[in-house]
Amino acid sequence: MALIVQKYGGTSVGDATRIKRVAKRIVETAASGAKVCVVVSAMGDTTDELVELAAKVTDREHEREMDMLLTAGERISMALLSMAIMDLGRDAISFTGSQAGIVTDTAHGKAKIIEVRARRVLEALEQGKIVIVAGFQGVSTEFDVTTLGRGGSDTTAVALAAALDADVCEIYTDVEGVYTADPRLVPGARKLHAVSYEEMLELSASGAKVLMVRSVEYARNYGVLVHVRSSFSGNEGTWVREEDIRMEQAIISGIAHDKSEAKITLVAVPDHPGIAARVFRPLADAGINIDMIVQNASHDGSTDIFFTCPKSDLQRAEPVLEQIREQIGAAGVETDPDIAKISLVGAGMKTHPGVAADMFDALAEAGINIEIISTSSIRISCVVRAGEVEKAVQAIHDKFELSDEAVLREEHPETATGQLKALRVDGSNS
Image 1 (cartoon, helix red, strand yellow):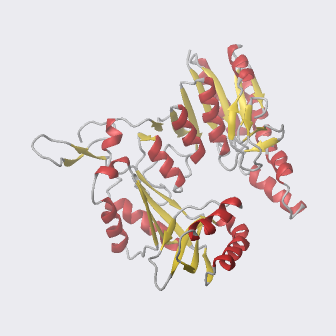
Image 2: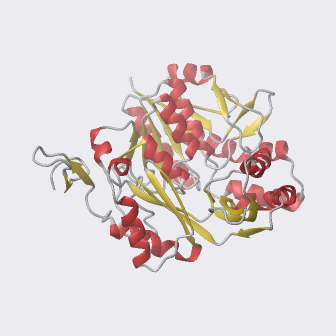
Image 3: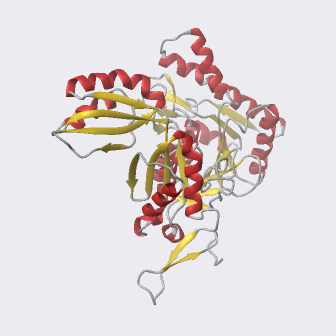
């Protein structure tokens, strides 16, 4: 008997009508003979509303109590969904994160799962019950309620799928799957049949909102097959899995963009050994995530250091940066929140020359200036002005013709380098 873990986001359970629709879908899955464990997010904007409510009560940080408050949203949706399923004639039971055995570290607001003790979930599934688990939450090793950060329900679902040895983890959302670009920016964006864990990690880390980065990491580490699909249709979505031959040949999988980061510049930093450590260690100790880092060539014994971090961390970062500036003798600190990061991702680019040049050509032809460049073996990222992000994504998407069938590289015996050939997503000749 198959065991399926399903996750439904806040939009999918946004009101009573949608909860009933989701309940019907879950019951249909169970009726096919599968054991079903469901992870659910808070309804609609509930989490944001609770954050706003807390801000009206206090302007201080109360991390433990915020976790207690925010986990209420998932408790509401899990109970309502369980009721709706039982009204359809199937036995169901709801569990909070702690009742489901989601054990985390002690970092309130951004806890990491360290163990899943899924005994109660397994027992309920063996009894023929549909199990509903509150996403986004767990219990710390010190027995406090914790939350996993934004998008944490994805991680809950994948972690449970790994612990239960599920056949598949279905992530239901308000889009049909993973696209070559955000379809709201690029109407011609194409839905991908499959992406590798590594490609999905780069897309998620670069701003794609379909899956949380930590959920993809968990899936890769434990070999969990993930299916991203729409909760509003029965269509097949996008599979996230180990690379296969077709994936290895695909040159470009997609483009991600992120407007949530800010650029910071440390001006005229003394250029000698140990400076980088003195800059980034205090930021790390303050829990500030650093993304792209670029250091200029040294002139007259000093250099500029550019890096990006989440805009949400700027307020905490600024006093730390001022202390760093004084300690290392830099000339100044400049912050710029009006930026966006554009990333081109594809496993095939590591063996296909010219991808970076084509991307830069596309931006140049669109009249867009590049401020920072960062690369990995399967990703190229550029920082541009926030107001130019839509034009940049469209220009790159057009340059690589991503609205068409996937471009794959086939080796032919008569050539040493092979040739480009357009293949359909399912691998057949176009």
